[in-house]
Length: 355
Length: 259
Ligand SMILES: Nc1ncnc2c1ncn2[C@@H]1O[C@H](COP(=O)(O)OP(=O)(O)OP(=O)(O)O)[C@@H](O)[C@H]1O
Ligand SMILES: [Mg+2]
Image (cartoon, rainbow over all chains, first blue to last red; front, side, top):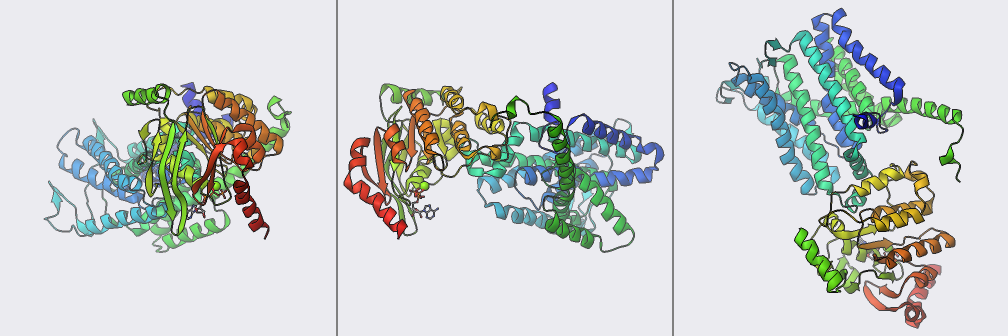
């Protein structure tokens, strides 16, 4: 337990120490208290801004910490969403139908990522081709699902629905509780919090260090005795299951999914969130994902067609002026000041007395 | 796997065969013959120096031995087992360690994290790694004081020492060092020589690529000279360093460099 807390407080993300974690607890409390002052409509909207965070955190792990850029995480988002729709839809009359849907969706995302990742990493595909191949996977899936209009394209009772997508997807139900409105909001907040804490422990634990070692020097890591292919495959599967979690939450939110969820625009968005936040900081990525989803939602619900243009312009600006990400950049400045202040305050210890 | 390891150990300790062996290794890069029919034997506990002018093929030879590059032809035999087709990480798990010509410790990680990353590479077939060599080197190189520094903040010679310690962390039987003292002061070079010599006396087999003649004289018994990809000469250090033709190779290089 102590070890877990130490790892949680480890150095490989922004923010450490008592002050930071008090702030995090306050933030969590604020989210938990939010429904008492907000309508269920606003709570559901906030849940929508949050629900892409697991996918973004997965991409941060894969790209920011592991150095492997995937441009197609939405493929696994879509696979999970569609699988849930098919399984939960067909099992609507069974008590455990929606839970079975969740299980099937996560399995489908994980297994398809394992199969695709095996080909990528064990085939020793060059690093710069990985983003292209993953993007192609997402676009192929989107195109294929777009062709599935008509009654003949159905699984059991559920129609895939072509470009109009799959509708009437049932919401998750546990016992008498249906995760809609406030319950859905709490579900999303809980899952996001769990994902953040678990990943932060992971990056500070041994496997996270191996990941960063691979990012820094693939050959050196292999020459220490690591099977780099296996390590990369593992993190690809984790990232893709997390994309699946977001896909699952998305179909809970809107009760529908269309092929455009895996289209080019959607494929670009996670990369933008992660890059704008700062890809090697989980916290920065989570914050950026929340803010940018809110921005996009507000821009586009005003009938504005230019949301993607604005978000894209933001990406270009960030790449030019703060390549390590806006939020991570700001955060590091802050922590640097704090560290300097502390170093000045503490007289040189035994460790720094040598030359 | 366990049986394999026992058989290998028996062959190495009992049978006295070489711990690492190269048979007629060849590697070309386009028109350049980087390795040309290299035959090579390294006994357990032996300390071998490999010398040769720039471009002689020393680093390529190491890359073939540890599996970074596949040879065009020939075989590599580690502890009695043909490993020619094994990927690098499997050879490392069998008991091979390597440092690169340019320092490649993980600069973003601390010294402690570097060593921990090296220690926790998945367990080798021969079970618990014997880290006696590591502990000796770690103590001699006095890295404990810098444990919590990021590697990038270490002075150059300590960074070299750190990479040696990383390669030793899991208790290899054979250590390949590609110019470990490059960029060190004469004092640091001689100290490194002392430490490596001690390790070899305690049973570690080493191959060291080195240009520094003083270093070679100090540590090696046998020296192998590579020239244009093939073994040009091999023999006791006193004989090799006196040979006129060996000097010519090096002098030729200095003359070219000066011109
Ligand atoms: N990846 C490669 N592609 C093409 N040519 C290569 C490659 N690696 C090495 N060579 C060539 O093979 C020859 C041997 O190179 P190698 O690096 O093994 O020499 P070396 O003895 O280690 O030299 P140095 O003392 O400069 O380190 C050189 O002519 C080099 O240009
Ligand atoms: Mg070399």
